[in-house]
Length: 329
Image (tube, rainbow, N blue to C red; front, top):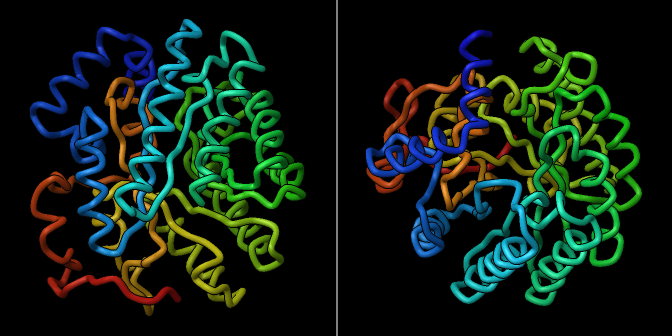
């Protein structure tokens, strides 16, 4: 817990995170999770992943701009991401952060830019996803998401399993039939609004996974199981099998590094292999990557940089046998 709190504290210090980001990208350890420092690098990594039959989700890391000009610059970069994915015929979407679009400055300014990005994506036949940030932003994020999703219908939203409120929020969102990315949660939240113990967060994650997959069976949700914890993935696979869900009705999301680690675990290999529906996160601009990439990774194990050998050879299981894409349970 002390180490966890120290990492949270460090993640609030811009000088520390900037320095770690620079050295992490230079020396390689950040590249296990972050594709590069430019859109060109991210697109190159995306092309490699898509050539292996994966979808990608581009994410511009960082939060909280302090001026309208900065927000509009980020908005333009998100639109460029969508247009470049489309121009290069790459399967995938983008994920946006509302605090990068001026949420701290003006709610309506943020909503208008989120709508602008979603509208451009819709015109290209693409979707977007909205990240969920700290709990102080939860209500306003839900409001903006609902507004844009009701109008355009091409938006997904991340929700956090450690918040007590999330099940109620899902019932609220059900009428707009959204894609929902389920994460455990990576912010330091007080105990009166968020679960603190890993066992409790895991139990909540599994409960919400079942709720979402049952919603998928009814056509209410498109769940995206965003965890590299193989026990959470195995639970999702078991529930999908119980509900006889077609693989098009749900997906998994994780970084390429996490994919190689997670699907090598026996708990995730009961009658299937790496799922083709795995949507891989490809991140640019590494500022602020430390907390969200480190804190949820309590079960993470080391792997090679995915800018190297893992993308150029089939991943292997613990017994050395190839682990190739194949059908879901």
